[in-house]
Length: 505
Picture 1: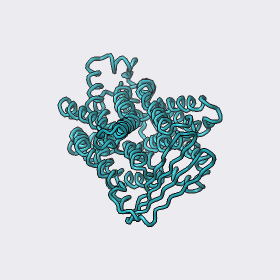
Picture 2: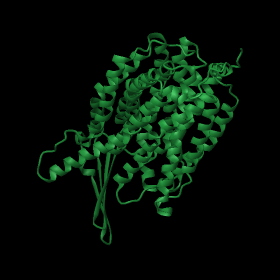
Picture 3: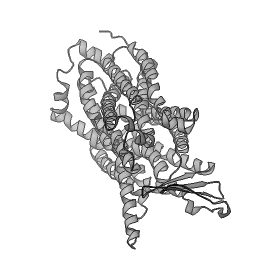
Picture 4: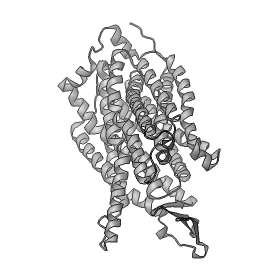
C-alpha cells in the first residue's frame, strides 16, 4: 500500500524548526534565571531566590518523563504528527503566559505558584515533543543516513538556546537597563507566540510518518503502548539500558557544557550577564556544526563508541577546564593599577552603600558593591573582562560543547533503532527524558548548591581560625556530572552493542 511521503528536507525542516522553538521557549527561563529570581520570588536573600528559581526551572525537567509517557502513548496510538503539534501549542501557550504573570510584589505567593504551574506544563509538552520529532525524522530516513538526518534534530536544543540568548541580548540593548529589568525581560517570552504560530502552520501541512501510517493501515499498532513498553521484560531491559547506558550520561554532559558553564561564569566568576551571553553564543555557534558531523560519522563507524568517547573525555577533563576558566578571570593573578582604585560611600540614614572599583593592567575592571540595610550586609561583585580573556573563555566553553556534540549528535538515531515501530515513541521518550529531565535538569540546582555549600563551609572554617576544609570550592559542583557520566560510561561500554540500525521492525 503506497503511503504519502513528505520531502526529506521538509520533514527535517518542519521537525527541527518546531523543536528549536520549543527549546527556545524552555530556555529563556533559564537564561533569565538571575533576573527572574528577583521578580517572582520574595526578596531579602538573593542566593535563596536564585536557588528557588533554579528549582522551578528544574521542576519543568522533572515532569518531562510524565510528558513522555502521556504524549508517547498518544503518538503510538494516533500518530507522530498530530501529537507533536499539540505539544508545540502547549509549550508556546505556557511560555507566553509566563511573560504575563505579575511580579511577587504585586500578587504575592500566587506569582511563583503560577510560574511553577506553567513550568510544569512546559515540561510536559517538551516531554512529548522530542520523541515525536526524532521518531518522525528517523522513520523517513534511509538506514545509511539516519544518523545524519536525525542529527539536525539534535542541533535544535542548542539552536534554541542560541536564539534565546540573541533575543535577550537584542531586547536588552534596545532599551535602558532599568527598562529591561522593569518590563523588557517579558518581551522574549511574549515573542514566542509569533514563532509558535509560524511553526504550527508548517507542521500542519506535513504527512504522517510512512512507517507508522503503514503499521496503522495494517492494524499493527499497539493497543496499549505503556504496557508493551514497560510491562514486557524484554523491552523494559532495553528501556533501562537506554537510560543507564546512554541518556543519563548524555544529560549531565549536555547541561554541564551549556547551562552550568553559563551559570558558573556568571555567578562564580562574577562576569556580567551581557558578556556571559556573548561568550556562550560564540561557543555554541562554533560547536553546533559538530552535531551534524558526529551524526554523519555515526553512520560510518557506529553510534555507541562516539557517545562513550564523549562521556570519557568529559569526565577526565572537567576539573581542568573549570580551573582554567576560573583562573582566567581571577583578579589575584592580575596586576592592579593601585593609583586608579576608587572608593565611594553613599549613606541614607542607617543604610549605607560602599562601592570599590579596581582597574588592572590588562584592562580588567573589578567592582564590588556592599549594601548595608537594616543591619544586613550584602555584597555584589562584577569582573568585566578584556577581549583576550573573553576569547579564552569562548575556547573552554567550545571544548565543552564539543563533548556535548559527541554524546548528543548520534543519540536520536541510536534510541530510535532500539525499539519497534508500534511502541517506539513511548519506549524511546521515557529514558531520554528521565536522563535529560531528571539527571540533566537537576544539574544546575545541585551543582550550584554544592558550590554554595563548599564556600559556606570554608568561610565558617576561616572565621573559626581553621584551615578551609574544601580545596577549590568552585569545582565542587562538577562532582555530580562527573559521577553520573562515569557510571553511565561503564554501563554503556559493558552492556550496549549498538549494532542494529533498522527502524522498520
